[in-house]
Image (cartoon, rainbow, N blue to C red):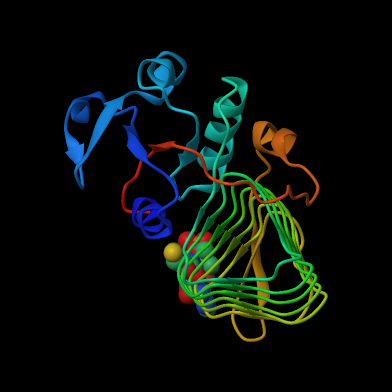
Length: 231
Ligand SMILES: CC(C)(COP(=O)(O)OP(=O)(O)OC[C@H]1O[C@@H](n2cnc3c(N)ncnc32)[C@H](O)[C@@H]1OP(=O)(O)O)[C@@H](O)C(=O)NCCC(=O)NCCS
């Protein structure tokens, strides 16, 4: 999916994939070689004259962790934004973001690093989405919603204005969220009700940051990191 978006966007030359599954090194995916392991990023980036990378992994925690690994290597993280999106000129989009076809991001929204806005989702005015959030296809988020780091918003969920979805919370497919959802909670149904709380993972919680976003950056030549090409 990320490869397809980059190809549609047309402003990046794709060098290849990195994947820690060594059995696929040397093979190609959709015509692009698997160059080596993510852990060998530094030397591979030099060898192939790569000047950017994007993490093509659906799992929020892994995506965020690998983004920090790329950062530590000093390689710029690039975003993949499908041309068939509508993004307000005053919206801010972070690095390593994936914005799929049909998505709409309205005025004064802030979309953090490593966020996925999946196919056809709507993010209305002044909504803030924190680092490493996955907004699944067809989600409708009203204005002034705040989604904290690492949250997962299931397919076709609807969120009314000014609600906060806490860090690492999960919203079920088709839920209608009328009230704020606490960190680590899973909420499902219409109206959405909390059905459980995940146990806090100390390492994950240490990585959580307040909602933040960075200005949109032009995408340079990118290597695409992919542990799961079905994302
Ligand atoms: C909310 C969700 C994350 C919960 O997953 P889970 O923790 O494994 O929950 P379970 O499957 O054990 O379900 C727990 C209970 O919630 C109910 N439930 C789960 N998801 C529900 C949903 N979306 N709406 C209504 N009820 C739901 C189950 O029926 C079950 O009820 P029961 O205890 O009465 O039997 C998951 O069901 C979901 O909706 N995921 C969305 C996936 C998605 O959108 N993927 C798109 C990827 S691009």
